[in-house]
Length: 184
Image (tube, rainbow, N blue to C red; front, top):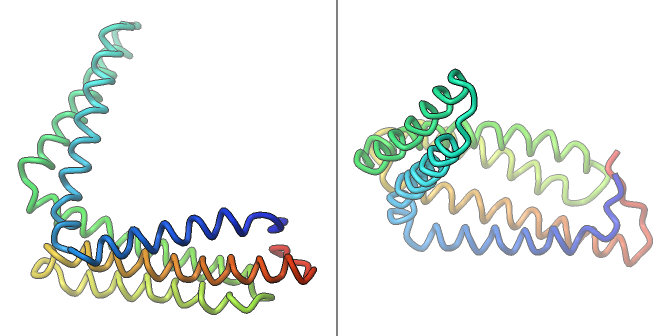
């Protein structure tokens, strides 16, 4: 895969991730508490839109019934997330553990494709850090759940952003110096 000309996009993404991570770190409790509300709003609005579409289009009875059920389920799950935020945070913590584990493994795999660059170690480190953060979150359940999600998300975003920043700068230097930078 040719990387030439893609370092600008990576630089923008890296800076955005670092900024989002810093915002999470400023108030990890608020970040954690906002997550169920955010997901609740998305599910309720999506369910309402799907409900109106289902009623408006009315296809055959089986599809119509399934579509109505699906939209009502989205609204119900959204309402439950909103009204039972403490329990929702625990569920989101479990999902965050799964995400961090997958992200860590994926980043370590991704770093193997950059073994010919200087930044592969930074990407590998961000993968190990994601796995470590997942372990910390798992060990802190349920006691510190109310601030841990925001804190770990913030740290993860900053580290991933820094690793992408280093990669994009290295790619820019390679582009200027004429080094062939392809993913093998």
